[in-house]
Image (cartoon, rainbow, N blue to C red; front, side, top):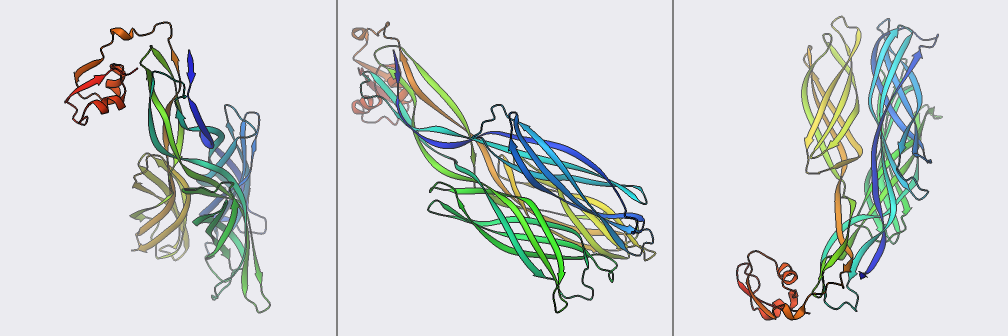
Length: 498
């Protein structure tokens, strides 16, 4: 005889797949005929844009675009020029059961950019891109179960726990349009060489079923000026806010990962001769709204009338905890390829970000542009590794919040202080075990007259539940019969309970 327990279920989202894919892309670029030959590569700055993600019969196809700016010292060693490169790419993620209701979120990282000088007119670039895909499905979660009213002889143990699971998974497009005045200097830029944009989330608040997301958009530009020996650099920032309809009114916290989909920059001159930078940034905010769920379910059951087998199941979920900010830092003394008479600029870029159990690490590439002992322009690349022990079991990087580089030189070496802020959320596996029903063997009933009405036992570390199950009793009846049940070694009277 099969008995199913009465239950109540609610809809939640379950993260059922997390995949990482890497690809390498290479491209060659030739110096325009109007530009000077390449003497030495000075720096390379790259970024990645998410263009689309499409659900297919096999899984999810992610398309993106790489953008890179290569600065080089001209062969006359008297100035710096640049090359701009864009390269499309794609990553394919296979899912076991791709469905139209599947929701996926993606993070893209440039994990390395290498440039080689093939000849004075030609370079080769190699990119390593990593994509991480998280997939979610809508499921029903059992949050309460109990015995049916007509269940003679059945006893159940119910346990309560709180689990924080996604109650909403959604996306929202974001556009930032700003104009910035360039600082007044002796020489204002005339052409953009490279740009870098980043988005950080500073706050989110739930009002009804609307989520108010606040953040900051940061922009860094490298620009050429005919009156400057090295490029002009400047940084700008602007706040933004967005209202997202998430479809739920409960939230303990929200994990938000912004992914930039496009960025457009333009240098213009005002009527009074000032230079301004026009920026149009497009991004997608990927949100996972987490809700606390109170679960009160049957975890064990037995019958005092007949043998029984339990119908059990265990469901694995992944809890996403609130994001934390960690600062990684290091100080290192780096030797350059030549004597450094004057350090002109350091171009820094982050690569190879890795979150593993209890640890964060990231590599930072430093491109030094300097005057050598002969007072000529030179350059070299060095790398440093940042690590930090953290308390998160499974850190998930949501974004790079800040990168700071400070340098001092003594002519032969450069003392570098590098610090980096990463926003991470801990994602831990959570298993929820419960009993859905019970199968009673009604052909082999216990002989009730053969069972003792009262049994005296010494509780040698056994719980009241274990004693009740063993001696055909109940926890409630044992408690009524004995004054003190807390002492694990006390003699207890166990009454038969039918």
